[in-house]
Length: 459
Image 1 (tube, rainbow, N blue to C red):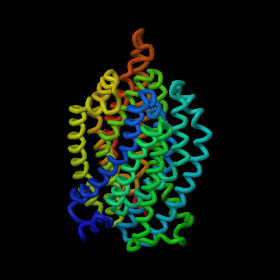
Image 2: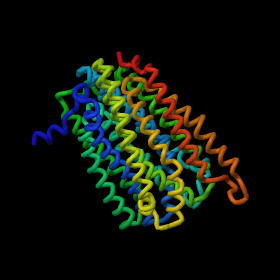
Image 3: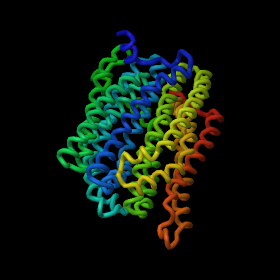
Image 4: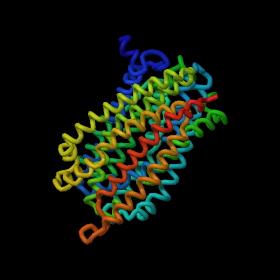
């Protein structure tokens, strides 16, 4: 009983062997990220198997727009996680209480903005992206339901970020697993039984995410030994709201830049037709799982660095950064090898079309080595963010996305045009992605070694 109770307690990462603390914290987060990835993966499998390849393409075409409008939540979540981890490390109870309260208020404001924006811009954006007429109505229906019901997704992301900042990745994992199972059951009910198509998939997702958000809130309300979730703390406070925005804005902007680049590249992707759009969806779903160790170690390094910077233990941060990055690289290398070995079987889950599986596998082999580079980027960027330096990772992302990825994608497409490939070679999408990942890893290592991140801790 005590061992189970211990799993639900906040983790103090300022003590113990660095790599062990990082791994112990990362494992439940990795499982949780796998569960969260299942949301979009199950959506794709269900629509691909029960509705068809065009429905699969519709869900994939909607993803860049969905990610673009959710950047507000990503920014708040990152700012919250950094502040919570540093205040937790410094053992400052009142500051921690105000931080959590302001996160709740900022999330409510972001939800209201997203709901209004979505109704206005979804259809025009889909037309701007040259979305094929055969799938545009499906895309619009999926997006509108996801945005109108985004309150559950928003609060899960923000409140789970708070839990991670406190070192409690296990509770967020359990609640997410519950929601994931519910999402799968609702997907099958709404699509396979009630024939609701793409709209049914979206409805299942928002209902499941709402459940996970409620569970996270109830968990935080019980953590009275660490902070107070009382009305006097759930009110706007300039210092804390400002710091959340200041620290989270670069991460939000980074995701916005990624999403804008994805939208620009999606326009190029759409020019290759429904078959390639569907292949791109399949690759990105498998890619989502390949990236999970990287994102999980990156988040763990943010919490680890934040707590130790809050405690003033910079030597411990550096030691943990080396050990955590090495473990991340080894883990990602193993998973990438398995994906290359069993890739066809994985991609066959999404479609019964053999040509689509072949095309998807060919694209996956192009970007495979890039996952190892991303392990380095995510781990060291996590350290810098945890220390309070969120600007450097943002500028690196701007550079690799705007200066590297987009020009290479369109450049390769332009110079490979022919009578056989009037829009250029389809490989341009994934060649550009690989180049951006490799350059990003190199620049991140250089910036980390310069050590400017050590000067950014909260005052």
